[in-house]
Image (cartoon, rainbow, N blue to C red; front, side):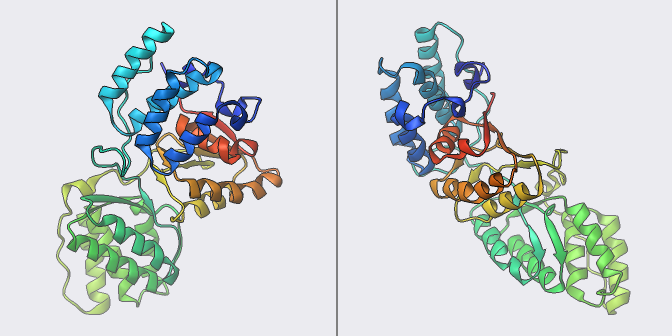
Length: 346
């Protein structure tokens, strides 16, 4: 059973005829507070609302939001108590507990959050500095991070040097780096080393570092021989990476027109720019939110302002698998007017 079922088959909040603010201000307020990480207040509001006999048709939506809140914050006992109350009230099967996606929260204590892959995107040149600083910040206090190289464009020697320095710094903090799409990136870098820009040592050293992190010992040793001949130095030693670095180096295959959202979207990251670029290059552009737990209020506003001009130019944008709390936020912000929003089926 799913929150989607409770809302009536495939009917999403975006298909409600009247504006949300006219029919359910409690949903609007709860969505905004959740976006601002006010989980305790949201819980209190929703608990009061499900006891209100005058909420009418939106009652099931409020229950669905509360179920999602407990799932997102990993509160299984509260979820199961709510499920029992739901079954008694509506005389139908409640949603079932699934493995939650945890996010950082100042309001509700939860297990360690799951880190979504960090995309290293754009040109690998001096402009990459801001992204690398963010990666170093995210690594603080985390045992492991995942770096996704699938969106890297041009490669420069200065960018290679900066990325190499960052990877070395992460090693010193004992943060395990798991690489996604590193094989393709390594192949591109290898081709660069053997062509016109092969005299730059930073390119070779970054290639060796990537091969080592991927545990590709034979490729590392073959490349190190070429490196030694090229620069007349002793061959570097291969050091096997920590076991956790063997995390899958490729994402599951997804269609080219599908953008996979991370767990958390905030207005301070470059993610909104990536989504906008993606939506401008694909029609329809499908944004899969199956892992998405929270979008902060600032990011939702940025998303609306960036996507609206694309829709005005006949671009079709679809947001799939959105949880009820984020669906409500998108509706409040007006995203339902420019994008097709499909709630998550769980």
